[in-house]
Amino acid sequence: MNNNPNNSIKSIKIDKILVEKLDIIIYRKDNEIKYLSESLNKLLSLNNEKDKIIKDLNNKLSDNSKIIESLENNINVKKEEIQKLKNELENKINPSNNSDKSGKIMCVNFISNDNKIAFAIPCYDTNTFAEVEEKLYQEYPEYRETNNNFIIQDKQILRFKTIYENNIKSGKPVMLVKPS
Image 1 (cartoon, helix red, strand yellow):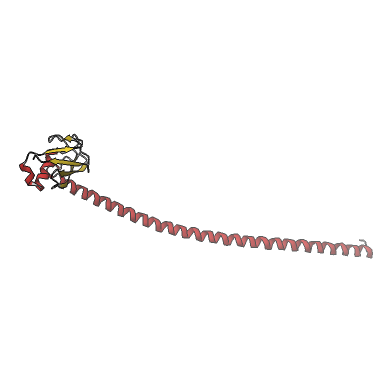
Image 2: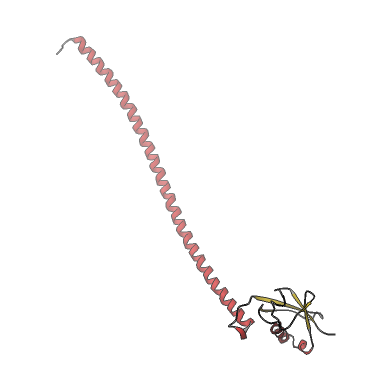
């Protein structure tokens, strides 16, 4: 070993410089750790907020799913009611022919040349015009006593052809022409 006091002083100075440099490095590393720790805490906080938002959105989605399910149930109930009412209407329109519901439901609108009739009769386009005419006479029996003609768009209607074959469209007026 060398007991030279100069070497010892040099060694102490070098150790002191090394300690100062190490202190600076430690200080920097401490600051870096502090910054990383704060960043991590911020990220964890953001992650927690996002988790909360996701949870809230999942709750809302669940609530909306329940609302949608309820609305779908209401729609199904309404569809059933509509079908039931449709069936009842079909039975009222054509009670004698309930087994044959192959036609399109429509309405024949009658008006008369003497302006005493303005009446709509629901029917199928597969009904003969004579069947619909009979329903008109049930409402206006006084017209049964005359030989009436029926005209739509300047064409005479043939009684024993169907509504479809006579080209009668729902809502279009059928003129009852009572002889003078």
